[in-house]
Amino acid sequence: MSSTILSVKSLFTSRVIAVGSAFKQQVRSVSMLGKLSDNHNAQTNPKRVGRGASSGYGKTSGKGQKGQKARGKSKSWFEGGQTPIYKLFPKRGFKHDFDDLESLNLSKLQHWIDMGRINPAEEITMKVMRDSGVITSIKNGVKILGGSADKLKQPLTIISTSASASAIQNIETMGGQFTAKYYNKLSLFAHLNPQRTIERFGRIPIEAAPIRRKYIEFYQNEAKRGYLTNQPTFALPPKVKEQDKESDQLHDMLKTAGSDFKAADGWLESTIVRQLKA
Image 1 (tube, rainbow, N blue to C red):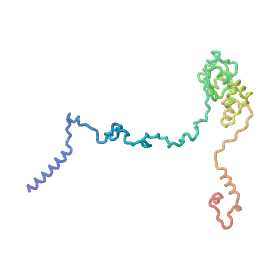
Image 2 (image 1 turned 90 degrees about the vertical axis):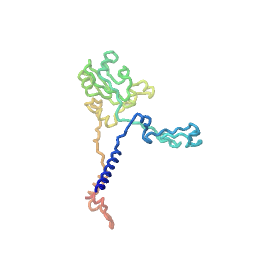
Image 3 (image 1 turned 180 degrees about the vertical axis):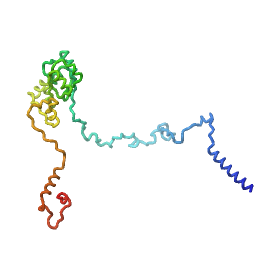
Image 4 (image 1 turned 45 degrees about the vertical axis):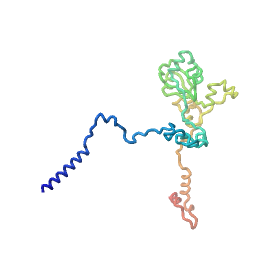
């Protein structure tokens, strides 16, 4: 009995010692500094080629002699020598639907008047603005802004592409007048360069009227002070939502057809026709 108990105790103590040894704390010392290293394959050293025949990768660097596989890698866009796709098709740039208008504040315009570079008694057009230097270049037109408009000292008559609501209010408060006028590419060139236009065409072309809906609606708007406000114009057709007009006409035809519109003898009526007639 005692021998059995002793054997059990010895078995238990051996297991405890084994478990304890598994979690034994590691003892570190200064001597380990010379044995520090990364984990295995944590860092891959680059393959050094062309460093002598004894390395196995000397001379031709393991690529053999000549040939396509001995050369460097081609670029990702290389298509084997054929005409690449970026040369097959022409360039198409982004073009937004908004006019590129130069902005002009009324405070700057008043400063030019104070310097004597603009005559306030005359109509101030885009040509006057460009010739005076208050605007150096005009691409599609000029928009008048009302920044610091309280500095206006006299009434002004301004004709430009457009103006903000605050600019219109301040111009009219001083007793002046603003008119928004449409210019296409040719008419704007003729307005800014009349002499060059005559030399090129032999005449000043007739000013074009707006043909796009957004321009017609803009220059007919009284709030925008459009130049077409007091002129006889044609009424724009109402905006119609996109719909399948052909299917509507077919539906109306089948509705009014009655019993005359039916399948021939020996043929079944189409399911679609029955649904439309229902």
